[in-house]
Image (cartoon, rainbow, N blue to C red; front, top):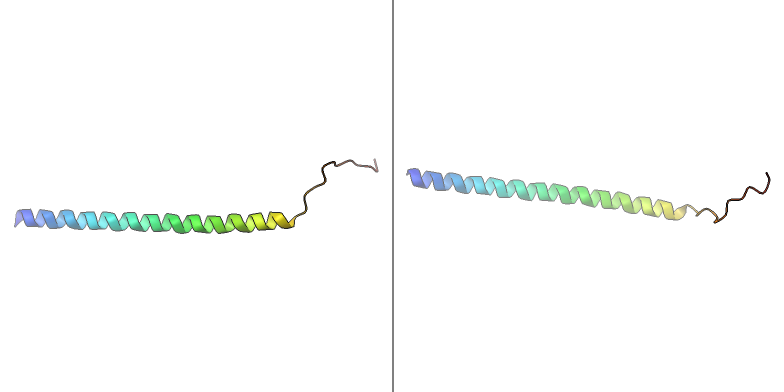
Length: 61
């Protein structure tokens, strides 16, 4: 039974490692999606701000 137990333990270890890897990947993807949404909101906000004129002369000085 020693060999069977070690095979089962190795299998459980691999399953746990695969789960942890899948979980970590999902969390990174969720974080990246949130950052993408924030970036898009920032870009949309910047689009609503008028660009400065090319020449900023102070004609009243």
